[in-house]
Image 1: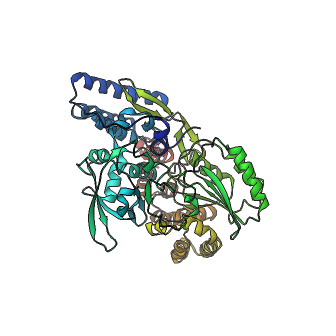
Image 2: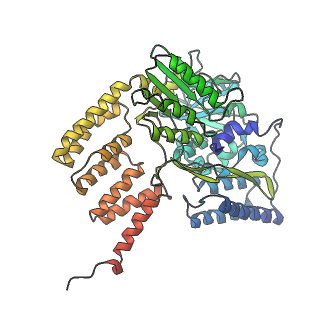
Image 3: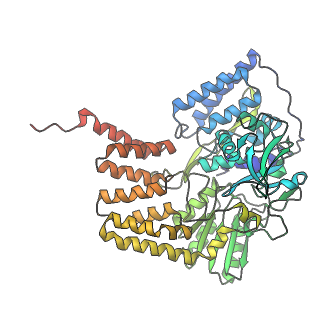
Length: 575
């Protein structure tokens, strides 16, 4: 589908590929805007909006026309007092409202952006235990591995939040990932109110003894920084940078082959066949059909107990999953939850999201890792166009909707069955919690089954007993790394409650523990509506719409409640 995650691909791959032979140059000084310049920008903004409305399948699915028009009006008000660079950031900010990671500023072809924006030669990553410098140019070797407390004068987490307003993405996970990539840019930090300086990046770091020090890092051109942002947050073997996990120990398997797009390795000690898919773009020397044929030939030779398919940090490419899917379905002995595993994380998007969708629907694979960075149903197949009066500003727009799931699926991400969290300590020690979990799966699955069985046994005594059994078993579920949303949704789908009141009581607990689950919240709202608890039902559906403005089912539920509450639709009073 040629629908790569627009921002990740642009920053991580496309910048180099789209600018062959270009040499870096300093940003040209910008002058005050004359009336003609204001007219040019105003006309280009109008063109941008109309072009998006024509080409996008449903431009206002995630943002109302009125909200978008208001943001566009504010952007046009910026023109007299903003530089061209600030106008590009303003366009990014407006387009981020669309919540579509394939619609936004297309960096690889935006000469004006590439000339104006600089980056510092470091990589930052928000682990479960805080943001750390994961790699840096060797001039800044002493900083690698340090925890980042503040960026400029702003807490690191707040800086990430501020930059996310420039980032297009299908969900908050993807926006945060794009914001992470932009964090080392002084120009971006200044625009977002993180730091007024543009001559250097200021980081407040936590030293091993708990004390804090301030480091300053000089920026360089975006082109010169390419090596530091290529291959995702963990570049692997790159001689120009020092890695946080590069202390001589072998890297974890998923990071062991740098930029190699796809490969496999058999591990005889655990009888595990490991398949790494880092990108869904075919390699010139071996396309996917030939690769998968070679993969299955090797798999059939080995005594395989488990097959692990790892798509972490796979930003997409095209649809190449069918030979692999067919081969697995033809080997029924592998298509079982205890034998087939798919590892996902926040870096999964676009064609890789499609890959995950397909395997979630058509196989019995157990998903392990983190929620994905794309929605299960998403827009893609991007097309690009320059602004007529600013040719150095190129825009990408989605041209199709990829609806892999039922149209009732309004979730914002695909969640795993088992959560594995990567900490800075894990990364530094070259540990892989996800692959380690796969080897312990049997014990975790047994613990989950035990809790589920106790809840089912308690079901004869009513909702309170089911909830009590869940509360008792919850620590065991957490210890087993069970994703509570997946567990509770599965239980609710399979267990028949006595009536709407008992199911609503259970769903209250489920939403309490899984506040990001739209399907659980929407379902709770429907049961509350059936019970006549209209105010609570309305709150549930409103929250669904707040989190996903394109949640049609929540909107229908709200409008039906409004309609049925109108005096003209009430049944006549009895005489």
